[in-house]
Image 1 (cartoon, each protein chain N blue to C red):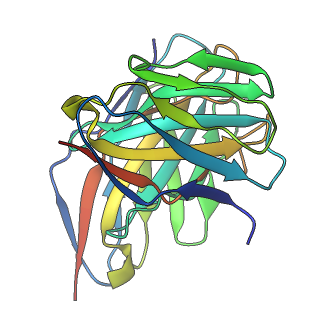
Image 2 (cartoon, rainbow over the protein chains, first blue to last red):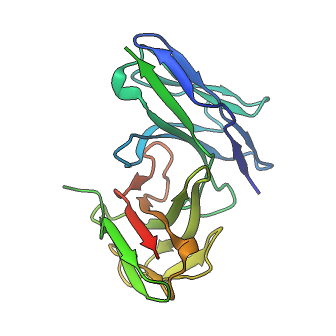
Amino acid sequence: AQKITQTQPGMFVQEKEAVTLDCTYDTSDPSYGLFWYKQPSSGEMIFLIYQGSYDQQNATEGRYSLNFQKARKSANLVISASQLGDSAMYFCAMRDPTGANSKLTFGKGITLSVRP
Amino acid sequence: NAGVTQTPKFQVLKTGQSMTLQCAQDMNHEYMSWYRQDPGMGLRLIHYSVGAGITDQGEVPNGYNVSRSTTEDFPLRLLSAAPSQTSVYFCASSYSLAGVYGYTFGSGTRLTVV
């Protein structure tokens, strides 16, 4: 079974600085997908970025980039130029590689606080 | 607005009561799922569906039933509520190739069982 590990305690970053949120995963399947979601205090889940296991380049979406190191099984989220609105819980997730694309396995999340 | 709509947003139940959490999407997504979120646990999959008439169990299915009679709707039924089912419930949907599009989540239902 696949597993996602997010072990960082609450993270703090100064506004306008970059921050890296760690995620490691475990799967025996060569085909998988990795996601990052943001959950602000209002509670909704917001899709940020996706990385496929066969993608040659690291994914980027605006200020978000994914540092994908396949051999180390890590998929860290990098947020550049942090903003106050980035304060939220961040979840790493992996799509079930064994069949239907309807299943995600989530990590426990990391709380990010951006200081002015 | 297109998206995933969950109702109700808040609910308090007494132990032993039953209820249905509603989930509807208007994006013609094949796949729909229910997750529960508990403090320090991330989100865990309860049930999922790959299309109308097809459902399967996830990681924590006990105490919940689902059905999928239409593409748009995927209700979650609590058969006999227990305090352990106090949680925030999220419904999500996606295309079959969910990669670059991600999964779209509803706004959640906060359920308290007393």
